[in-house]
Structure formats: C-alpha cells, structure tokens
Amino acid sequence: MLDERKWDLCKYRMQQARESLNASKIMMQNEMIKDAINRSYYAVFYALKAVLAIEEKDFRRHKDVVAYFNKMYVSTGEFPREFGRLIARLQQLREKSDYDDFFIASIERAQRQVESAEITIAEVEKYLHSLKQKKI
Image 1 (cartoon, helix red, strand yellow):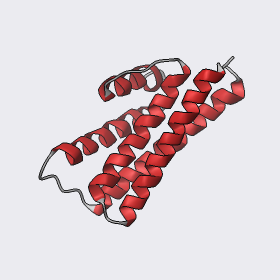
Image 2: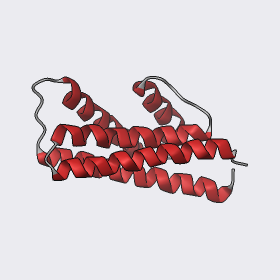
Image 3: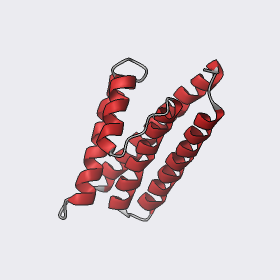
C-alpha cells in the first residue's frame, strides 16, 4: 500500500510542477521567453521528482534524476520512449537558454517548450492517478 508520507511528498512536488507550468504560461504572455523556457523545464523536473518520491528516490543533480527516470520508467515501458526524448529536449533548451549568453529563442520555440511541459505533466498525473487507483 502506498505510504501516505510518500504520497504527500509526491503531491507537493506535483504542486510545484503545476505552479512552474503556470508561471511559464504567464511569462509567455509577457514575452519573457528565457524565463518561460526555464520554468517549463522545472515544471517537468518537479513532475519527475514526484514519480521518484513514490519509491523514495532522490538525487542532487538534475542529470541523475533524468537518467534514473529514463532507466526505471522510460526504458521499462512505463512511459513511452518519446517521453525520454522530450525530457532531453526540454533540458537541453533550458540549459542553452540559462547558460549561453547569446542564445536567443524564438517565441514559437518557447511555446513548444511550454506545450511539451504541459504534455509531460499530464502524462505524469495520469500515471500517478493510476498508481493511486491500484493503491500500491
């Protein structure tokens, strides 16, 4: 049965994911492109960490969270392979946007980033809901 403590952490992290996704949408409306890219990536990152909370896994580095998620959830078929590629693209664009001084993202590219985050979070929510229904 799903430990309530784990589920509380999972719910908290999903709340962080939804807040970051909402922030990314607001930033898009205000043409704050780099900030929208950053927040959309973090929305996904928090959603991945919500899944990991169920099995009490956590990592300090982003790349470790993503690698573990891909190994345990994407490569096993819990999430489709395209999901892993989507996460990689989100992370790559966020890193370019945050760390490359002269990187300029188009509004269209940033909008795709936000939409990808929205799709990812919806899939994670569906997965978590199915776990809750199974009462693991």
